[in-house]
Structure formats: C-alpha cells, structure tokens
Length: 616
Ligand code: F6R
Image 1 (cartoon, rainbow, N blue to C red):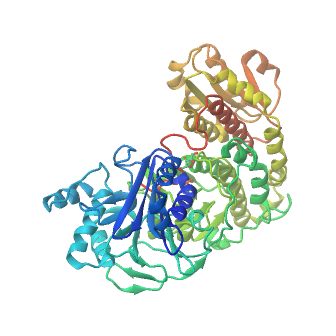
Image 2: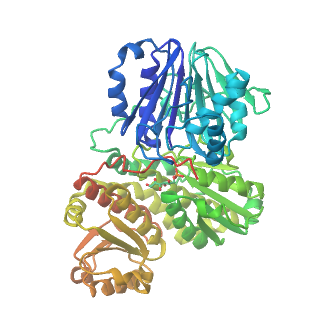
Image 3: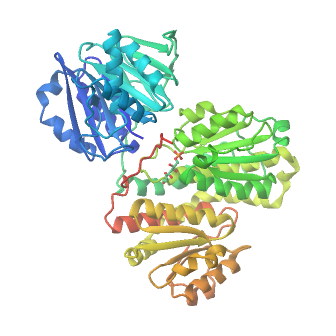
C-alpha cells in the first residue's frame, strides 16, 4: 500500500520519480505527490486521483522540474483521511523546511499529534503521516542532524513505516527508515534511488540494498550510510535485482486482467516445468528443505493467507487431507495473528502470497517461526519480505501481475499446492508413486495447460452470459467440496472489479439461511462437476429454481437435466473433480471480467483496492 520513490543524482528528479511512481501504481492510486529540492527551498506538487493528474501538474512547472536533481515521491492508498490533495504526500512541518513521504500506519499518531500541538505544530491534513513530518522536524531542531533526527523520531513511533525525508538546509541527502514496510535503495553511478519495490528503479540500476526493519539510512548521490537505531554503522550487502527491466505492455489486450487470464496456460506450463516430468515420476521441489524425517513428523498443517491466496489455500486443504492425510487448517492471516494459535515444531506452516508483502501474513509467519514451525512460502515474488522469512520457498513464477485482481498468480498458487501435496505424499509413503489416482492427477496436470487454452480460446458464450446478467445487482455462487473455494474466488473476482454484490457459498448451506434472499432478481451460479457432490449440488439448484432464481451452471459434461433446470450452462473440458478448481476458475474470471468490462468499469485499477496490502 502506498508507493515511495526517491532520487538523488544528476538527472531530472521529476522524471525519475514520475516513472517510478507509474510502476508503483499497483500499490495504490488515489492521489500522488512529489517534493523537489530547489534552490534554498523545497517545492511540493500534489494531485488527487490517478497519477496522470500529477503528470499534468508537473508539466506546468517545467522550469522547476528542469533544475531539480533530488526529490521524493509518493502514490497513496488512503488509510487516514480522504484521498484529497491536502491528504496527499509529501507532508511538511510548519515552515515547509522538512518534507516526508510515508508508507504504513502510525498507530500512536493521536498521542504524538497532541504532544506536537502543544509544541506549536499546526496540522493541515487528516493523515497519520503528517505527524512524522512534525516529529522529525522537531527532533531536527534539537540536533541539526537529519539522520539522528529520523532515528529519534522512529523510536517514538509505533506501527509500520517506510519513510523518505528531505530537509531544505541539507540538499545533498535523503534520509530513509523502515519497519514492517518494504524499502530498497537502488545503487547507481553518481546517483542513488529509493523505492518501495523493484519495478520503480529497475530501468536505472540492477543493484540494490534491502533496508531491514529498524534501520535508517542517509542516501547521498555517491554514498549510502546505514545505521541501526543506536547509531551503529551497518554494512548491508549490495544485491543484484532479480528482474529484467519490465516492458509492461498489454500485448493488444484491452486490459492487463484479460491478458493475465489468457497467460494462465503458459503460467501452468512454467509452474510444472522441471517439477513434474511425467505421470510416473516423483515431484522435484528443489527449494523445499524438508527432510523425509521432518515430513514424517508433521502432525498438522496450517495454511495462512489473505484474499485470493486464502482461496488457493482452501483448495490446498482438500488435497493435502485427501492425499497426504495430514489434518490441515486454513485461516485468514488477519484472524490468525490475534489469538492463541497452536503451532509447534511438528506443525508445517504454508504461507501463500502473490506479493510476499502482505502485512497480516508477514506478522503471522513471524509468530509461527518463533514457535519453531517450518515455514514454506508460496509466492510470486522470490525477492519479497516473506520469501526472506521462508525456511522453504516455492516461487510460483507467474511473471509480474499488473492487474489488481489476482488471476494468473492464483493459478500458479493452486498448481504449486498440487505439487507440494504430491511431494509431501511421496515422502511420507514412496509407494504412492504407484497410486492410480496420483498417476492420473499428474497426467491431468500435464494436460491442464491445453485445457485452459480451450477455455480462453472460446469466450463467446461467456461474453454473451456476461452481457445477459450484467444488470443484476446481486449474485450468489454456489459449489460443494473442492470447488467451494472456487465459488468464493469467483464471487470475489466479480465484486472486486464490477462492484456487484456477489457471495460465494457452500451449496449445502444455502437452505440454512441465504435461500431467504432468492427470487428472480438474484442469479445463482453453480459449479457442477461430475463427481461425489454433483447430485447434491443439483438438488440445491432445484431448491433455488423453486424460488425463481435464474440459474447459471459451469459444468465439465453435458447432462440432459441441465436443459430443464438451468438458464445457461458454460461448458469446460472434461476434468476430474480433484483438479477442476484450476479450470472452473478460468470461466469465473472471464465472466467477472466481461461483466465489469460491459459495465465500463476500471478493470485493472478497481476503486479502493491496492495490489500489495502492507498495512494490518
Ligand atoms: C484479489 C486479490 C487480493 C489478494 C490479497 C492477498 O484479487 O488480489 O485478495 O489476494 O490482498 O495478497 P497477497 O496474495 O499478495 O498476499
């Protein structure tokens, strides 16, 4: 949440900052701003709304932009205060000499604000972040050393932060600090960069220093000094960044989301490549550092994640319990962290996160590590904070996902969970390599990319259904068994990008309450896979039909009963119940996409959301 960029060197700071912020738009996009070091003063420019508004503001002050070679920038996802120009960062102290941008939440901002007001500080915004500007300035007035002032200030702050600050009287430096929010320092030749994430600076440098929690740094154009909170000088290593400069392109698709949905067949090939050779071979997961003995000692598994990643985890529970026979709990990280959870060194914890930076999941992972559990992280960002905390890493290699609504990363997480399940199962009992169901699942996994292509290559029926139902205000998605999480994920996709009220529900639970809402105004989408629960779901659909609900089915086979019962059926290629979540979800993603697109919504950047949720 929120993106930070900083630059000090010989180039035009405004250009570096704007470009950097454009690569951080996935972190928030409700307002933005920059502070540029000018002669004897700091100039601040802000704009509410998308980054283009700031671009317009800066284009009208070219004389200032042409001269400034040092500055800091911010793109905001509002936590405290509306997304207005006043609340946009950078924030300043009373006299405007000190500016700061902040990512995170200052939990004790009210107490700090009250104290600072007593000292004469006047607050202009409703943000928690403005406290930092006044506090650092207050500390600076005592010591006239910006690094020391930042250090003293962060010692008084509770919460999460990445800060970037400048002072008018010290035009040769930017001071940064970090705790529980990502921040990297890009190392250049005669210039240095600061950013919340790699894409913002990768075009300029491939070398960076990862700032750790409770570290502060003074960044000048040809030097970087890092200290701990006691002022001790530290030597963080310079690392090579794992990305090539990203040429972000929609490749002819109208939206990134549509492109990313279509990329899923290749993502599936990537995930399986090198790990699953053929249906009779063992699964190879090089970075899973669990010995056979350790795996045999696992008494329980806990999967911790949020949002879409949590839904992938729910599918994981079904397969882990089915094949590995280990009791598995799945829990939203935000619920996991504030109760007495039971985990020990016989608990395997699987953290799932596209970004690897989700604050709730990071906190949960830190807690279980203290209890001695082995932590496997499934992430699309092997360079992330979570990956750095992992005992074992399963990078999913889905490629950078730009659209805020997760699609291809979900596919990659799902398939990684299938691989991990079979890996654990084969370690517990090597004989399962001959198990018919496992052989057949492996074979199906190998065939999956082509089946995904069959769905994405023929979207006419999905488009037609999307158009037909786009005017409905409420939806309910139902399924049972392993596709229950698919119903949750399908409903989440629809509400995120179309703002239609969509709920995922276990089909069997419908009659225990939600059926009260059903009538002709609330369509029911049911997942109808051939298998154990098919007849049960069909009965639940009959019950919905009897309340005059419109019914849409997603099915992997043609049943003559469908014609009488359903208003529309979307067919997918035949697939086992066990692997069907990986194919059903593609239909639901496309349906959500086309409904949102039909309604003219901002598909890639839906309102109120951000791709990386770095606040609890
Ligand atoms: C939905 C979506 C979110 C994320 C959630 C967790 O499309 O993207 O629900 O899944 O914020 O994020 P990660 O996976 O980065 O931990």
